[in-house]
Image (cartoon, rainbow, N blue to C red; front, top):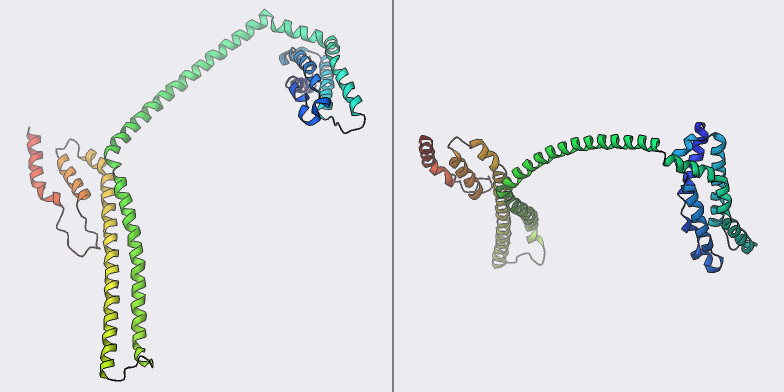
Length: 338
């Protein structure tokens, strides 16, 4: 039996040579067609194929001296491959070096087989040993059974999660019939809120303009070319001030009213959005009590009627649906009696 360190280093060397890609040895693109190693690809493939016939699982049966022999051959052949990969066509005597490497590589397969044939034969015999195959088959069957049981549990859990997800999807789909309409009110509320902010800024600007003109009007009569010289000019100056104050005041009031109007619309649409979002909870809370019609009437009134916001100057006259509450109560009572 081998020691762990020798087994590990031999496994690494054998794995490296087994995974080597011989097509990389050509180097026709960087060396050119004349100096390329295209002739080395096929001999390299035969060498790598020979190493692949030694299974890694067979290394654990070899002694340290045998592992060292395999490792030495693997490292030697990998160094040949590395010489080709590192070959520099501009170096001195590059032509002779290339020819020597190719000649060595072409006869290398037969030399390697003389060194490794017994290990290859043992690996093939071990792979075809019926007792080993039986043990591997039993291990494989057990692994399949364990994996199948694990997959069965996972499928059962996935089915349970899928059922839960399906119920959730159905609930969401049921809600979407009504609650998705809240998006329209949300968008309108945002639009109105943006317009309200714009009119608020205009209100501030007009207020500043009115204030600046009020201060300026205090010294207006002291300007030489504006100073009135007689009663007629004084009346004209006073009239001009009043007219400018009236226009600025009107614009200020108009801007403020536009601000309150858009803010009012924003709040109303926010109310309607909230009413639609809570529609499902209201219906479920009233289910089975004979009062569903009352809840729906008030919900519809909240959604489709103007709401008192504090920005509008008028007083609300109550919700349109509230005057029919007595009628709906009577209807609900008649349904309960049936």
